[in-house]
Amino acid sequence: MDLQLNGKTVFITGASGGIGRALARAFAEEGCNLALHANSNLAWLEDFIAKQTWKDRAIAVQADVSDAASMQRAMDAAVTRFGRVDVCVANAGRWPKPDELLSELPVERFQQTIAVNLLGAAWTAKAFMRQLKPRDDGHGASLVFIGSTAGRHGEAMHCDYSASKAGLYGLVRSLKNEVVRLDPFARVNMVEPGWTVTEMAREALDMPGKITHIVKTAALRQLARAADIARTVVMLSAPGVSRHITGEVLTVAGGMEGRTLWREQEIDEDSIRKRARES
Image (tube, rainbow, N blue to C red; front, side, top):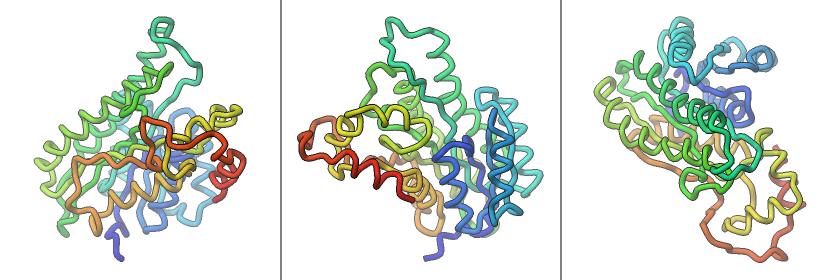
């Protein structure tokens, strides 16, 4: 099946993280040009690109996603290099590790989480929309936000993260009606991962019993890999298969529910961890 992504340009924020790298690889496999964003990890990202077979189709751009002007400069650099950006994935985010009751949560932490996860996504979308215009072939642009099941179910002791991801629902449902004023076939969607094996989550997942606690609420009894999220984003971004999907939230969490589905003795934590780390 032709996804109609070959030759399109994709802008990915947070490309130095686990999901970001998987996104870069997945879009590169479809023949896309890549504008890959990082902030403090720019040098690492440049080295990562230099080692890829698709390095001539990719650039690294630096920006603080919480700064609208910084994001605009990064998007401008992508447009200067490739002429336009067809697909934008707002992936950059932070998940502060310490468990904190809201009553004890530092105000600065809450503000920073909102600034990166919610405002950063908004400034990414803003910069993308400012360069948006219809393509001659009628292939509509695509904007995909990376949310979290924490935005749907909540996450005790991490309400700053949950609130920041819940706010993305408002962006999706509002911007789907705005982008069509700039490109009549443009679409806005969100992919909502559950627990995914990445560097950001690894410390928490390595805690004894943590995986059992997570997967006993999921029908598939396994964790997502970064590639699982990336492939879903590619599908939603592809005009060849998703041209009539917009304003939707697709959860990629193994059938997670807000209730226990499996007893602890029915869960093999070592096996789950091994499968999740397989490429």
